[in-house]
Amino acid sequence: MAGLLPSPPAKASKDNEEQLRDSSQNDERSPLLPSSPSASPNEHEQHAASSDSSQDTKSLWYLILLTIPIGGLQIAWSVELSNGTPYLLSLGLSKSLMAMVWIAGPLTGTLVQPYIGMLSDNCRSPWGKRKPFMVGGTAATILSLLFLSWVKDIVGGISGLFGADIESEDVKVAIIVAAVLGVYVLDFAVNALQAAIRAFIVDCAPAHQQEAANAMASRIIGFGNIVGYIAGYVKLSTFLWFLGDTQFKILCAIASIALFVTVGISVTLIPERDPRLEGPPKRGQAGIISFFISIFKSIKHLPPTIKRVCMVQVFSWVGFFPLLFYTSSYIGEIYLEPYLEENPHLPEAELDELYERATRIGTFALLVNSIVSLSTNVFLPFFIAPTYDSRPVTTGAGEIDAAPKLQGETKGSSLLEKLQIPGFTLRRAWFSGLVLFGLSMFCTVIIRSVEAATALIGLVGVTWAMTLWAPYAIISAEISRRDAVSRARKLRNTQIDPSTSRDGPVESPGSGTDTSDVEEDQAGVILGIHNMAIAAPQMIATLGSSIIFKIWQKPRGTPGDHSMSIVFALGGIFVLIASFFLVGMKDGTVSPADLLNGLEDGDRVPERRMSTSSRRSQDQAAVTRNRSFGGAEMQ
Image 1: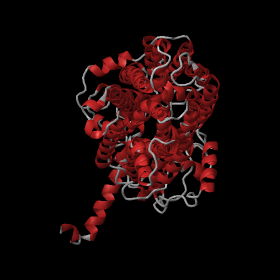
Image 2: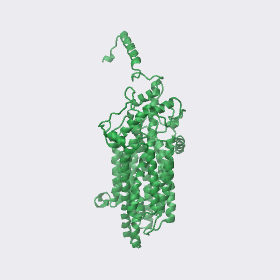
Image 3: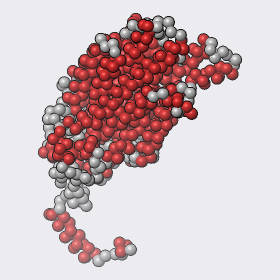
Image 4: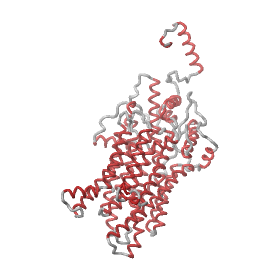
């Protein structure tokens, strides 16, 4: 009520004058005063950063809850990878046609992820940008998994209603066609869900924790792989018979439950920024033609670092594709060869049982690969010098803290810092992993024992760990940094000129000109383009594999089929080519303060220059990052 009573005018005027005089002389950075146009860019950016709660350091549990949906998705993905090929072969599909079926993943990944990314960027739902697509993608993935696993019963039951013989050739063809359609729908749903989850991680993790968030995501992916491959290796029908009468049905049921639970937890507990505060979305992008025009524009204006990452992915994924889809069959054929040589005329029932056992042996190799990958993701970050986690820590007055205050901080943090190998950056670790993979794939041609092949597949788990971490960390850091700077500039411009609308055009943080279309590219579009670089080469690998299988494959049950080894070796060549694109990539990133300085001067973004505050922020990032890896909770 006191605030409603009038005050003596003279006294109020005198007090106000004294307060303003004292404030201007003794506290020029007071948050109660609007920023003056003469204030330095650093002060504007620091004040903006302190006003943006989304850039506050997040706890370890927050990062786990944020990234856990990708673990549920990976369980579903591991079921398709390890059991999809044997399942389709059991339905009567040939190897050459099977390779054409698996083009569904790359095809939908090339088109669906960028489109879903663009739609989610423009979404203004009160639920958030990404959550509606996460929920819809989860529902579609679960329905597709259940349909694919029960396709034989569904098609057979419908055919039986019309009096058709379930064992007839026409019904078998109908089952194969329905299964192929199910694979395409499943891959469409998986890619839509993956696009939403990846963008959700970028949006909700602060700029200085993008490397830690993506490292956590790669660990959860590894854990999801292990769960999926253990389930595939164990004969589940003996104790989970109520989920289905075949191994594949039970696996799909487990994957559906895991996906529902993990996505539900994250959507419920992780808040997302209200997209309605960002103003109206871009118009005219919903159509197919405008979509392609927008994508090509975005590709043209990608930052140099992201462009180079995409080039690495284009070549490396030609080699990764066979590892994902053909490993279980490759190991299984090595396991089968001595049995088929001794018994060339096995009955069909015994042959099916032998192939099912071989599939479980092949799945065990993928399990070893996942264990190595997860171990790499857990321990390798301790030895890598932090490269992309950098952001000054500001106090209320805009000063930079020399040391962060973390809950449970002990002498262990200094020990973790001592483990870092000078010069061993994320880029160099990624390069080493690609070289290891390329050389290992050449060995598949000469290996003829299950143990050696399993060890080889396990070894390249190191490469897979880096593939799940490095490119996403580099790209996410760039996206989040640009987004943080964009919001900081909007807030600064509003403080300088209150009449400036927050929805007005903002200059791109990549140039000194007004390129609003480029600046407005957000996580969904850029990650969609990155996924195009992953998915498109898989179509090349699929077509190449189909040709090789057509030439060198032998009929089912015939020993001496080495077509898989040839595909693996050729893939290794492409991965070695990909490694050369990392040679010219520069390490490090530019802090928001440096970027704003460059923009204020009208310069392009500096790639190597780093201010004193940015160098001090590297120390903050190192401790924050190591705490995340070590399991200490951060405030």
